[in-house]
Length: 145
Image (cartoon, rainbow, N blue to C red; front, side):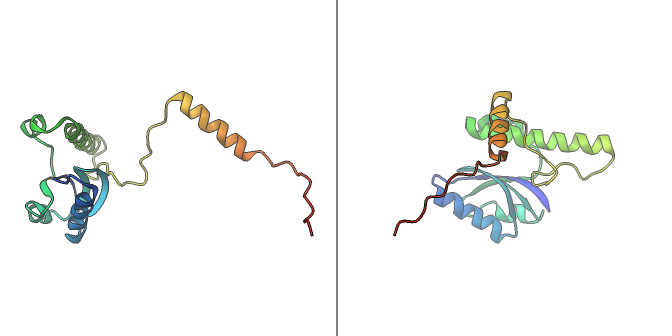
């Protein structure tokens, strides 16, 4: 299985979901989606060319996205493309540093999201402390007959 950046031509969520269904029917596994135009999925390498041309699928990239393609894309898609390219660079960098070809995966359970900003992190910690406090026993109301 190989990770793929899939550009979708959907204009509505229904069309986007149809494109996801097409990917899954091709034995793909969606790892991330950025509606309505980008899906990150794992595919069997031979399925990438099969997907291109299917209804709702504009392109499938298994490697870095070229500068020409990136520059011609709308701004919101450019951001996803740059993130994809950075993901691949990080994976190649890790493989060269530790001598493995495993690299990083979008779906790797060992990956953690970035820490939130300090003020949000403090708010979360306050809520956690409030939830851990024992509840004070109160008087129960007697049922009315």
